[in-house]
Image (cartoon, rainbow, N blue to C red; front, side, top):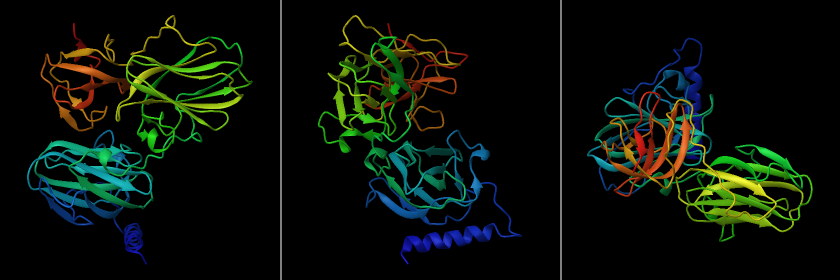
Amino acid sequence: MAPSLIRRAVFLALALLSCAPGSLAQDSLNPGGAPRYGRQILAPGFQPAPFTIDVVSGGDVAVKPLALGDNCLGYAAADPDFVVELSAGFKRVTFLIAGTEDTTLIVNLPNGSWSCNDDTNGLNPALVYFDAAPGSYQIWIGSYAADTFDDAVLYLAEAGPEALPTTATGPDPARDPLYGEITLARGFQPSPYAMQVLGGGRSDASEYLADPACRGYVSEAPDYSVYLSEDMADLWFSVYSPAAMTILINGADGRWHCRAGGSGGDLAISFDYALSGLYDVWVGSLEQGNYAASIFYLTEFEPGPSLSFTIDTSCPGAPSTDLQVGARALVTGSVAKVYAVPETAATVIFQPAQGAGLTLVGGPYCDDGLRWWRAHLSDGNRGWIADGDAESVWLEPAN
């Protein structure tokens, strides 16, 4: 029997015993418990890099009801799976799980706080800590679904998660579209037919499609699906965005069509004779990790300067704003922070001083009453920052 199968068999046996009549079911995570797969001391510059260890995900503790954080999900064992001792501070350290199924990552930090993630790098969870403090990091590898125990690998590295394995599957026409679908015939109205989407994704189109024009990062599922009920003599699929984006189409004949462009320009793919059938459309970002609001639109004529679009930046619970991608912004609130991803449970990259300037390169992304923008910092780093909450404004346009 292979070592991984032996590990899984032993773990399943222990899990079944823990659920046997008369045993005490665990309902919390125990940072002081003995790590099931051991511990490792790491110092900056450690070799070999990345450090890896084989584990099995899952357990009988439901993590979400514990309210450890917004992204603390899945099912994990009560005791840690692994413990990492950082013997000194790290400028950056990444914890990543590469699993055969959907896994989650839960970490108890040296200061006692919790940090969690799900689906950062494909279905792989990852956590990146900048200026990581020395001390003990207890790690749990959870399974997203209950009663699921799967082989996985824990990666520890000083590189970013993009340099580690991913489970991104590439653009997949078989998936349901993220923003909806429409059936069109000749002379459709309104024209242009327009839809706002948040373009971007984690799949590098160039890795999956042979066409050299297929560049940029797209989601696995199409952003939008268009069904033509009849052939059309002329049809244009176009994208407007102030960020650098790409458009990818899987046509009714199964062929791929791509075009990438620079910031602020319209992207268009035209069909001189569009066959009836299904057209799946992806709006991607040329920059890895970026997501930007974009207008996807359809016309039966070549788009020209007479067409103009406005990005809707409204967000329930957030203050109104005149911010926009491509512009400079000033930090006006003392509580503003720049995060690795657009959620307050994520790693804080930087806390800018009041009056500091930022360049907005992505967004807006609305989540739980906050409107997030991807910002370019003066030191070259990029991260996500919210512009305010229901009570105060933290970010305003620079004059």
